[in-house]
Image (tube, rainbow, N blue to C red):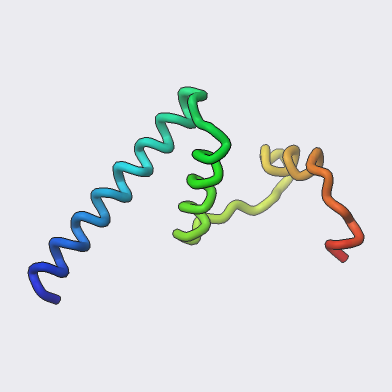
Length: 74
């Protein structure tokens, strides 16, 4: 790997770190717009971050209230 490629990789990692910090700030402070939440969700997905449902998990409550069409999921 050339020095230019290494420099490029370092910059990309730094940019991703800044982006993650900004998402954390906006979401924690309540300032996040729907587009911010969607972008944060996509960043997690793109990086292989997934959450499973289990009893007592807040995601379970969210899944229960969302209007899923059960016929589509069968």
